[in-house]
Image 1 (cartoon, rainbow, N blue to C red):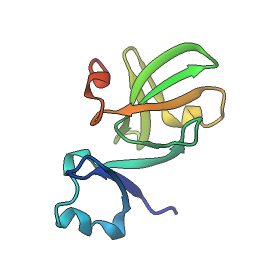
Image 2: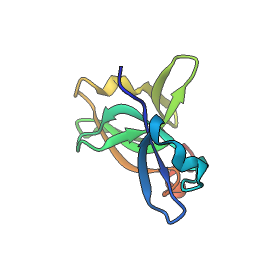
Image 3: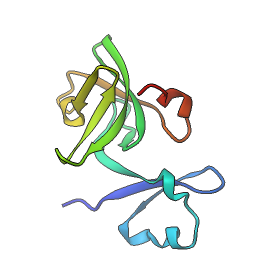
Image 4: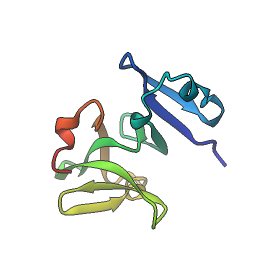
Length: 116
C-alpha cells in the first residue's frame, strides 16, 4: 500500500509536498491548512501529479473538451472530475483513451473554479 502524500501552500505562497510522517510542518504553522490536498495517485498526460482540488481539462482526443475540478466522493470512496453537467470517476482516464491535463487549482486560480 502506498503512503498517502499531500501538498499544501506555505505562507509565502510556495507549494510543499509532504507525507504523514512530515505533518509536523502543520504544527509549526508553515502550511495554510485550508490548502492541503491529497495526491490522487494519478498523473496527467504531462506526468504532473493530480491532487484533490486541482482544475483539469479533459477531452477524448480533442473532442468534448470539459474543465472540471478534482473532488473526493466519500460515499463512493473515489476521486471524480466534476464539471457542469458532467461527473466521471478519475479512474476513467487511466486507460489513456481520454486526455487529462492539470491547468490549475482552486487555491491559486479561484476564478477558474467559479461555476464548477
